[in-house]
Length: 376
Image (tube, rainbow, N blue to C red; front, side):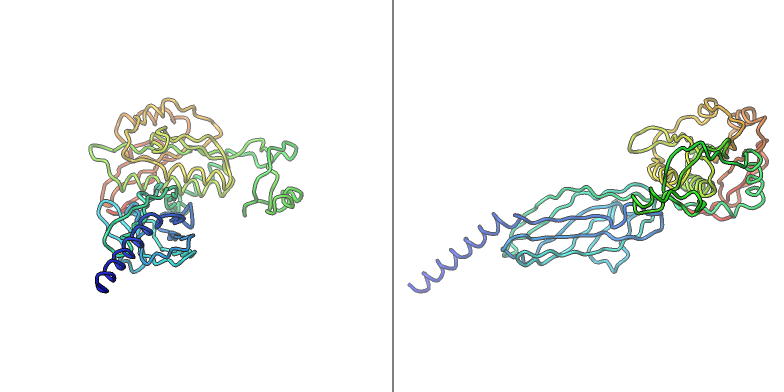
């Protein structure tokens, strides 16, 4: 009789504990996942911050947190918790006591530019006796923008120096101090005499007065990502984008007004990349964010249409970045820029490819190895 009572008692306790956990394991149990940095440059490292909190008195001996992310976000720790196929699948194990929160920082390296999100966040509980599977899905809102790695165009040599001279030639060298335009954040190129101390005191950071120039230096980058002949190359596309970022970085640091037009498409909005003239650090961030969102797989408009729509301005320098140099495009650009010999055509191409003189503009070759990245 005692044995029977003992068995019944154990069965009742088992049933009670199983029911208790089955109904309450997910209550006040939260999983939060964010990127420590929202904006990074390709090749940089950051952390995924994973927080799990159990805001109740019921302990959880073991739970699994699971999520997916793009495989170009590479885990740099000694990783036994993830598997990679078309995407990377991560599985971490936690043991949570009553009213406990645990935070882990998981280092990742960003190998490709783009905008990346976390998918399929869920917490899995295998039951208090490890004999069942319970799943609690979590909201996924975290994303990271990986900017292209700007190529140092200061290494482009004598043609770059010539371009500097052309820019100086097209600029009046004085600023109209009476034509106040706006107040913006200070950057290291600004003169301390232009600091607005009242605005700086209010915001807690250095702010400067920005005045209109009688005529400022202007550069327009024209980025063509359509294929050159029959094959479309990821290396060519990525190097073209990173060249664009490099020129933007250089010119904006020098106080140039920069605009950008491209037949590349923004994968978020589907529209072509188009940005009117601007300057400063904020404008550079906008350009890099647009370049990060370029979807190379989307259909691209014929670049000749963009050239035809372009209104050439006498006070501007144009930097064309295009691996495509088919005869119809070359003839059109030569005709469009026949009165503007100061502009530049940059040609990304693979090592060993023979590039003969093809345009009446200044031209510059940028040699690419068979990987993402280029060599001068």
